[in-house]
Image (tube, rainbow, N blue to C red):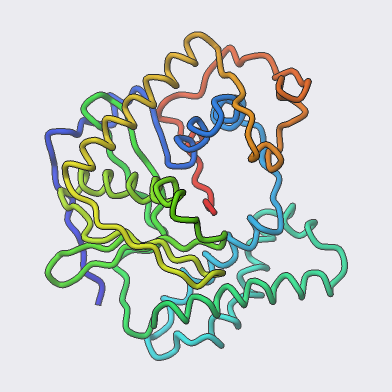
Length: 295
């Protein structure tokens, strides 16, 4: 049985009418990685082309969400596999560009098989028959006292009868090496902070499930750490706000540039960004923080 978690008011919240800015884990990570990438995605709203990798992540997430619609004893690897094609049909109906990723039917079949391997990996990590998630693909948000709104979508929240909460995030990318675990946990710390500030509950456990590598990364947060993380996000927003005021979003070249959709517009590669928009997205505009699968 699902356990409801009541919202709780804390001194670090304010009404949505006082919103002065918005951050999601995706956009915060964009700015940390490359300020110009943040501008392209959050201000210029340049589209991101789907890839087989990102599409697979979206599909696997969708199947795992639907899996828990079934009765407990029906949550089997075969049932998950049976959901793949219907969910793919639904996703391509909503976003026809996804269907253009694959030419021959054999190519699509091989890709679907790779998604099934991800799902098989999930079943090696936990038994969904024994679980009743409290929330799935849940929007969580809070407006801090400063007016900064934090917002994102959590893959899964598990809540014990005692009220202890576990935040679970599925990953279809590679598990990080130890030196990069902090970066991988950034997203879950973001969610933990939002849940603490909005519900007055510090999650007992943050869990990343790497389905391809069949590995789990667990982390236990505490209040002092979340306070420090809140100050980090506030400083990050101050830097974003300054860059916006000065219209100065500089590129930060790295190995990740090879994955970027916007190299042709980047000065680091001889390109020219589009003119800076005269009308900026409103801080309450949800499109500024559109959720995405982060793998």
